[in-house]
Image (tube, rainbow over all chains, first blue to last red):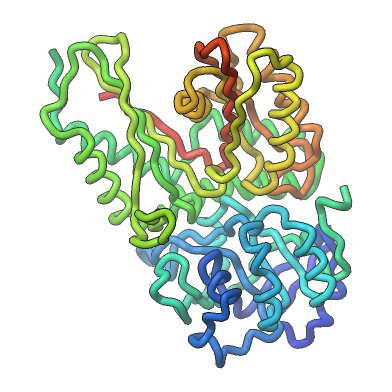
Length: 177
Length: 278
């Protein structure tokens, strides 16, 4: 298995061109964390709150963690099923995001969008939310506070493990096998 | 006559509901270890090891196994000559609220399904009477949204050939499997009234891995479906490999001469189930 270490946000989006499906990538740096309801807001243009955020070359992680517990900064923080974001994905990519992290397969439109926007989709360890807590250095609520569980957060991650599931060339793990 | 006291009920059910979020059943862990032995796909093995590592870390830290702490399905089996000296439903609701708050489990429910308002905790309770004296059994299955969303069912014509039904189950499961967290357990309910049909499919998930249906015919079908799905090469998290489904459980119920309902419930590898006798 080929392994890579990549810093986020990307310095240059061309860094993604070296990645192929099934490669393992360890991400370091900042990732934005949001899911269904924020996607819908972005799609509907309800974005005043995030107007001045710079999402260029950033990553989005589809996750809603459990609350902070005992000595830990946050709780359990595994990925949610990504297919529910499929219809809203272009709106998010238009903001400058280049990396999507979640679990499960996506539809064909997401594959085309990855090619068009030179973006990738990655799968991380679904159902392993306790373990992924080890890779989170900090967590900060940044927008849409009223969504509570589903609000937008920013994590700083260390060696956050993922597998590339769609690459910038439009290859997808479920099309290759 | 056995009178179940509230303090005893609360203590035992609370302990069970807490422990469910930080440990997986032994039979399930053995199944994962067995799968590692025969799995040849490197990525699949990596994921299976991570599942075991996650359980160990969750037990040690009391961080929930999965961030989707979902909702508990609570099945209460009440024996003959057994009664409660408290209001069962309000006590259960109180237990769920307390455990989810105290253990910092995620609010994963909305009270209004369309307006998506009032994010909170919730649970679903089912009671049934059993033919045993002076006892009460509480079974809990915590389900996440990913697993709930992949559930499917269909009303077949009563004259449908059995092969067609099996193919429907296999093909639909293979199609939908990558949207939850494989390796999964598959629960199949055949027959019954429509609401009972879904419920028996869900309740099969309490069966131990490698336990077979008492009827040989269904026992063989269980094995057949498992093998068919595992050659699909979807594997853990959809990354490939032969470990897509760890077991398949079928249960049946009498049905109307005009009906043949079939429900299929996919259970992700975060199998949060357990039971306690009171």
